[in-house]
Length: 393
Image (cartoon, rainbow, N blue to C red; front, side, top):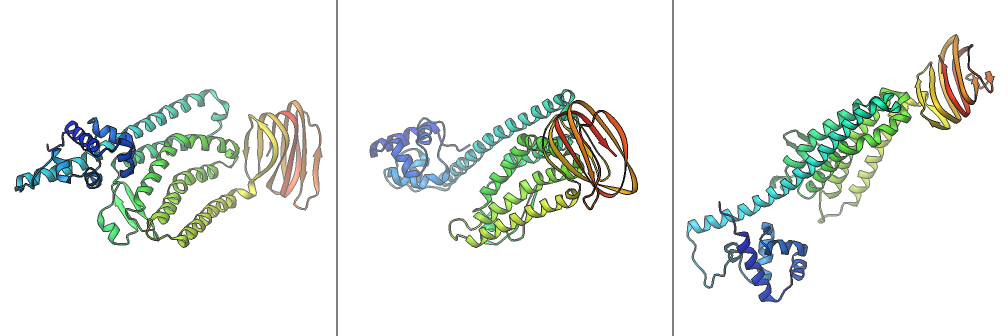
């Protein structure tokens, strides 16, 4: 090993700094770093990044060779091949030591997030047995996204390259392949201007998938579970694809030219592309679910519903307000209606496609009956602090 003696290096820097009459804070300001970093150097807890050796040597009035050797060289000394090799190896050790330190830090962050994710999934599994609301929601996608994020998170936090090879800066390359990561984004140039920002986005996404996705998925599915698999796919694809590739695309385009060439036009185009993609996702979802959607202006507590093109049922502890939904029935079909009232009042109104009232009754008690309907019908439920259930099929 050709490491620098950290204690010796720290003492040497401290001596030079004091000779120059510079405080740790002043030295830190000159190097654009924190004074805590200077303190760590001088106490032997760490050494500078290799990129700081030249400006540090200039400020302290010594050569980089003297910094690496941790001693003053009074007269120029001719260095033989062995001494030169040793000096180069010290520089390599500094670079590798910094990489290892950063990797350890990233490993700790990843392990904490992965642990919290596993604990959270286990708690969710236990809660599903006791919480009625969770029993009505398919939480398998939560486990899948968490596992996906934990797997890719290991790569994003530990193994991903934080700097691209030089040829990415010399050429316009829109494809990056390394291990499990395959990025192919037409219109995006990968280089060392935008790559650090892309890495940060990938890491943030993995944390979202590991820890925060359930807090988004569960409340939305509680409201959208009547749409079943369509709502699940929309949420999962939105989180996995939209939450990953759209931010990566925007960030990559924003920073691909760094500070050398502000690309206002590119930023505007990126914003419009993101808006179009989001609209496509939303409109696609509405295309599947819009005609089946329930219009609602009601307060609902412990509300569980099952609905489709030709049926609609729900049970709840509290319903106050109205809900309206369209159903598509066969010609002269029989709509079987079942109402259960435990407390409060409930009104039912059925209209045909032209808006004519087919059936209307207020303050329905527990009751089962049938109504003959045809084609598209509109059903409106009005609840007044109602507890119970209804079924139309």
